[in-house]
Length: 228
View: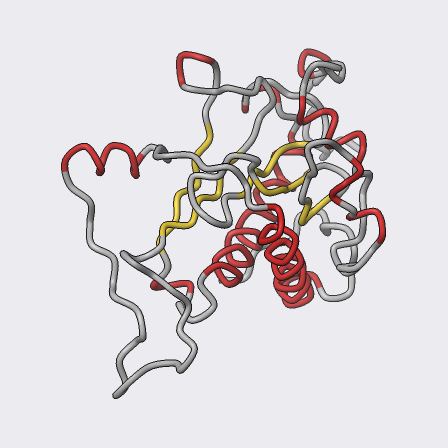
C-alpha cells in the first residue's frame, strides 16, 4: 500500500549461528515454550552441561540465569538469533526485547526480594557491546542484576510497627559506586540447588506478569504498549 512505511533492508543484520557461542547453544537447545507453561518438561536444565536454568524462551528472546552471577538472581536476556551487538538487532527482535524486559525485571525482583515492592528494589540492567566495552560473549545480552540491601534476608514476619523488615539501600560511594553503576562486582559459582528453586519461582512470577500484560496470549502481541 502507498501509505506503508518503506521497508528497511535487514540483510546486513543476518549472522549465522556460531557453534562456538554458548548462547547459540542455549537458544538452539531451548526452543520456544509458552511462558504460560511453567512446568513444561523442555525446561529441564540438564539438557546442557553445565545445566542451564531458562525462565523465558520465545520466538525472539531467551532469558536464563547467569552461570557466574554477581548476585543471586542475576539473569541474562538475549535474542534467539546470533547478533553480536545491539546495532545488529532486527526491529522485531529489539521490539520484543523491549516489551518483555520490564516483565522479566519485575519477575526477577519479586522472586529474589519477595518482601520488597518493586519501587523500593534496586537493580542494574546492563548491556555491553564489544570487548572494549567489557562484552565477554559476542552475542547481544542484557544483564538484570538484583542489588540487595546490606545484610538482606527475606522477611518471614513481614514488617514491624509499620516499618519494612529490611534496611533501605544507601547510594554507594567511591570505588564501589563505579562497580555497582556499571554492573560489576565479585562473581560466584551458581548454586544449582538454589537455581532450580529460584528459576521455577521466576517462571511463576513471569507467568503472572505475562497474564496481566498480555492475557492468555502465549506470543508477544505486535505493537502492544506497556501498561504504566
